[in-house]
Image 1 (cartoon, rainbow, N blue to C red):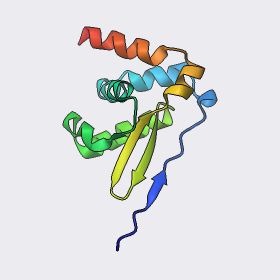
Image 2: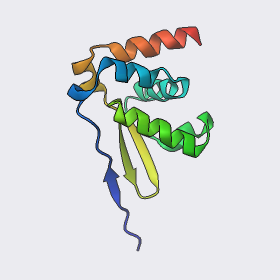
Image 3: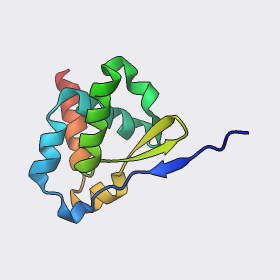
Image 4: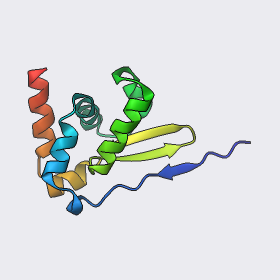
Length: 109
């Protein structure tokens, strides 16, 4: 029997994240699509759902960038990784900012 190892990657405290850092992370179209998907899903999403957005190695860097900017949490269970938008914490620090950015960017696409 194979034991599944679960790991939660540490996300930074949002009090340490500036608005500039957050906006810089969201300025990339791929990262913005990922955040938009997570916002609409309102739950944890498998990274496999984003495979159509690029190569695995590039996506890995996008996930890392989003995590370090405080936007997402990442959980690994076995060989699978899951992303979740840190919506509650983000809304406390930057009220309605994520929805505003995502909704306005979707109007332009």
